[in-house]
Image (cartoon, rainbow, N blue to C red; front, side, top):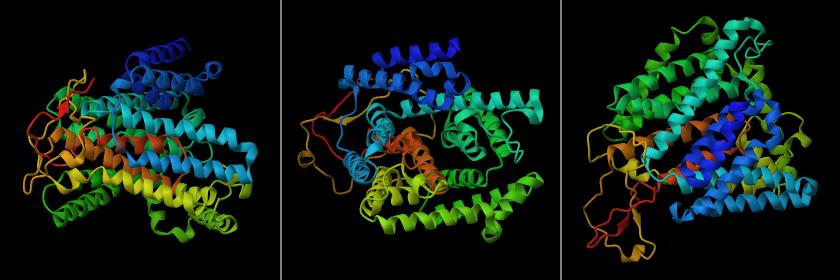
Length: 456
């Protein structure tokens, strides 16, 4: 209790001085969720408390924030307006509460896109996240060893492992365990530091052990997608070679599945027989009801957060949920937002060349320089070469690939989940926007210095 309270106090104060370390503390607090273990701490409203600290810290240190023209800003603002209009017409009593919750999620997009400005910052953030998740996995292992089947970390209905409080669901807890896998894989494959490699392997083994005990089919498929995409994107050569690499990894993962415990194989086999899977049938019925809602209110939707008022059961599909609640314009803007996020990675998708050997060096003090165009430098003032291609250093490319894989895997996971408005969806969209802060978006030649160092 005292540690948790101290954590929130220190994170709040740190965010006032350095928004980056404040963001690390804020994001890790969303993972650790001390309030689930110590309900008394809710008296200070932890999320609101740290959110206020982050907003104040960004205001005090606004000169340190990234300045760029993100089209995602306009799309997210459009989503907010669409949700407010729908609520005003169909559920005005929920307008204030639902809008506040949406703004809380959107704030994670703002913090990630403005504060994260170098590959080192991405890596530090995800190592801190991995440490937090490993700690939660450790708590589950210890509690189950002490209390056996009576542990709160075991679902009495299915015998599968689950989390505590907010994560008291096998699927959500399992997904939490694989959140940082792409970054840990990047460290294991590309870092020169043996200590960093061993630390990453240890954390991954603990988290994957717990993930297997959760026995979530969706999470296992998502993990396989992460691994396949990582090797495909890191591979050299053209698209055909990358597809061959992906197919080879898929076959390897199928081979690994044959050595998994019997219950795991049995659960995974049901993926291929959806017609006899009651869980999947229930999901498809919910999706059909979502399309019914769209037919009733095609323009406004039924209103953000109002699904349960019309159906009574969760949608189990974030895209169907947004479509039903925000209408046809809402889902179009949301899909547009996701597609726009993928365009941030075009430099690594069209250019495989790097400027240095494959290695990752962790810069704890954020000394990596960030190159930014000066505010008065316009695209029209930049001379574009005909043949010269600006290469991307391996560190930046490795981190960008990890972000891309994490984002793609999350979008796959929420296809079967209810995360359309969660803080994590907009956090990952913010990570994609922040990639623009260190990846070259244009190949340019300069006759005079056009760049300035980051304040971090």
